[in-house]
Amino acid sequence: MSTLISIIVPVYNVKAYLNQCVNSLLKQTYQEFEVILVDDGSTDGSSQICEQYVGMDVRIQVIHQENQGPAVARNTGIEIAKGDYLMFVDADDYISEDCLLTMMKTAEEYGSDFVASQFVTVKNFHMPVVVKNNRKPQILTPEQAIETMLLADKFDVSPWAKLYRAELFREIRYPEGKIYEDLGTTYKILAKCQRPVYLPEILYYYRLRKNSIMDNHVFDSSVMQAIAFNKEIIGFVKERYPNIYPAAVYRFFCSNRRALHMAIFTSGYKEEKRQMISNLASCRRIVYGKEKESIKNKAIVWVAGILHWILEKEQAEQL
Image (cartoon, rainbow, N blue to C red):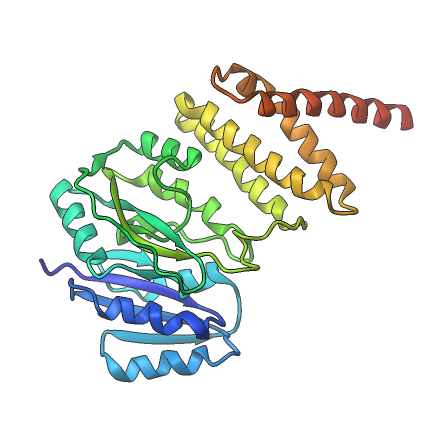
């Protein structure tokens, strides 16, 4: 097995965690890989740590650039990657020693161009105990893979904990200047896959840090970018995979529900709140149609419908 894997690591002010991340890459039982550290304008000493690793192992290279966000950093790595397969690892996360070997074996055994593994959440430096399982990988169709992503059933939209054949990114890049850029990318990748596989084994350790995007419960206008991407997915799925259209709408509903919950406790953003109420009301047929849907969610849609009607009436009276 001599297939080269390019591991792309966007780095931005993660001095406290960077060593653990890179060391986990160097400890891999699978040795045919290159590490591309993309220093995205770090100011905390992470840049110097990157340079130290370059001198330690010829498989590591570092690119220094001005701070432009993780999307640009990933795209930079994609452009210079030489591997047949790509993997993204966030610089504050780490992977198991057999991560590359297990995912590469799965890709070759099943002829897969996309392998998604499970991950476990790490808080601070607490090391979770992971028990190996003997469950077999699951072969999916692109449609099944996108539905799985939409429902976050087995894997989600995040770029990490996944192995991609490099060709999948030939015409696809992460949208630059956006937050939640993975929402605008992963579904397009899955649609291009020939044989996506889900590997039910924990190989990736995701660190949930305080004040990270995933841990942020404060509303601001950037949250609307996630909603916009989810709306974009609805249009894509409706045209390409109409059978899973309800799953796309349900994800859109959930993103608006969560965002509106945060916005309620935030002053201002009147237009954004109005838009989210309208979005929730538009999902009522799908949510009402789910037999096992919670009464809470059905109530949310019902209330949103009433609020939407009131807001529309007020707006009409002002004209």
